[in-house]
Image (cartoon, rainbow over all chains, first blue to last red; front, side, top):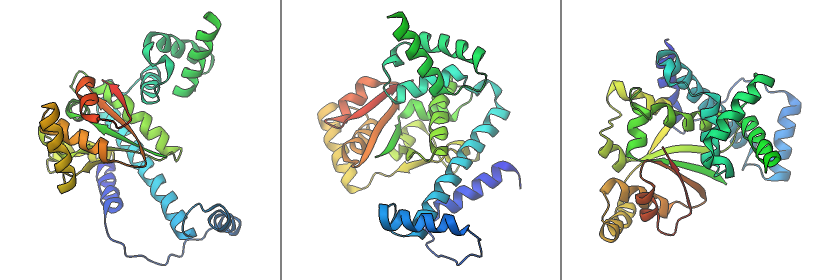
Length: 137
Length: 137
């Protein structure tokens, strides 16, 4: 199955209103199951361990599908791939971060931090930009 | 609290078309959402169906599969939403699509709202008293 077809099929299944359930032979580590039971009973994490497991699995699948769709899109359209600075600016805008109004400062921070930490993520960039702003204030 | 990110007409068009001048910018925000989903942060992206109509974006077109693969869901225009949207049209003289966006903003409860838009003034006009983060692309 080609990746886009698999993605479409997974999305169909995730969006399905089918509430039919199945007993599975999925083997879950005993300690993990006990931790889930405690989270449900003592922390009210979900109505049941089944609900907790299902919600976590759904969230994981949704994240996987979304990232796979983006990765496929970037393969088809390399110019569409956002830079680290683009992502940091987008994160700042979504979070109404004080530096959201200073995209050039964020772009400089992205360049600087990648020189030191090639695996830096957008949150690292914002933290670095904030630190630089504090130092220069 | 979970977070709902709404798209306006131009955000839909920018995401759907890799040649759109704002494609990469719009995609940056979706990539940030994908990263957060991967960290199990409750966040989702949706488009009111009225906006989809204005954007000419039909999910039945094979070339329009990308938004679905990104888990961008629809918010339908049901009776209650239509009533609120009609009031917004009367009051603010905006398009049906923007009124649908405003109605969704005003009716959503228990979710932190963000709208990605090219027209922040219209979004603020239709949001009423709803607390909405406006992200401009």
